[in-house]
Length: 175
Picture: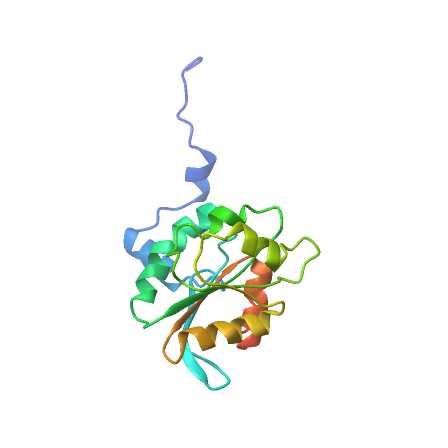
């Protein structure tokens, strides 16, 4: 039949088979993304034992997205502190807005030529109540563990470079 249109299957429908909702949910539940809402419970560093939550919230939108989960995890701890480091071209002033301003924040370097200097981040975040500067990641995490005490939650947010440094500190396998 000349001129009759033949039904066309999209390339996607030809290549992707239907996935049941059950299989999709199971696959998502089994997915691991190191550094993305990665919870270590219990976490141990020296004599400290508590909870450690890592997330590569590298911009305001990332922080908004993970804030509900961080807040949920914080309810299981008596005290929560943040360790934060990012790159200098990020809008530091808005990145921690979704989280409580009364949580202590330990600012640190991330080991990159374009890192935001901790003292400059302190100026940008001056509205927060407790700000600390530690130049080295290990010192920042240790200080945060001292702030929260045993059983507390330390949430580490920022560039993947910082999250990688903290994962190596605990030590976790490479992500």
